[in-house]
Image (cartoon, rainbow, N blue to C red; front, side, top):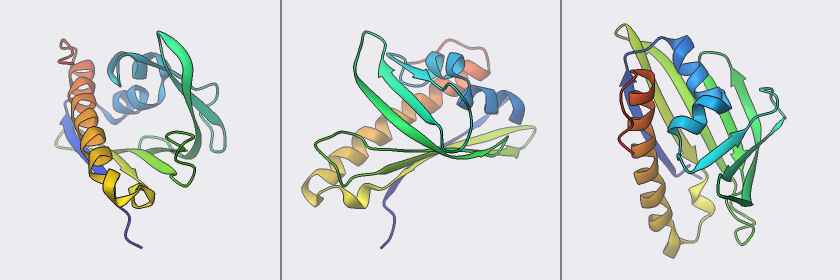
Amino acid sequence: MEKIAVERSIWINASLEQAWGAVTEPEQLNRWYATDYHWDIPRLKTGRNVRFYNKHDDSDAQVARIEVVDPLREFTLRWKPHPQYPVVSLVTSFLLEAESAGTRVTIRESGYEAVADDERQQWLDATGGGYTMSMENLKAHLEEKPLPY
């Protein structure tokens, strides 16, 4: 079965090392990625759990398992978006590649084929819109400009 995914990519005037820190360090993720949320990454290691929660109400926390830690290249998480969708397992990857004296950062989230047909497009649109804003925030964060969102 073909993987249904959302993907957003942006070129950033920053080194691979700077971009890697921005996508793996909770203090930096908290600044640019869904800014009403916080990350808890106790240990950046494959098989470990990560927690992502609303900074105003952590009762709806998401727990993800780290699947890939390939320094300066890939950080991948697998998570269940909501208990009411037990068959849906999403995989979110932050992919980095040196490009033109900067870094291309791509966020790719797959697993949407398990979402019911009548709901899938809403999920894809919401995720795509959110990732577009997050990528613009990441660029601004790393280029030391005000965040647009």
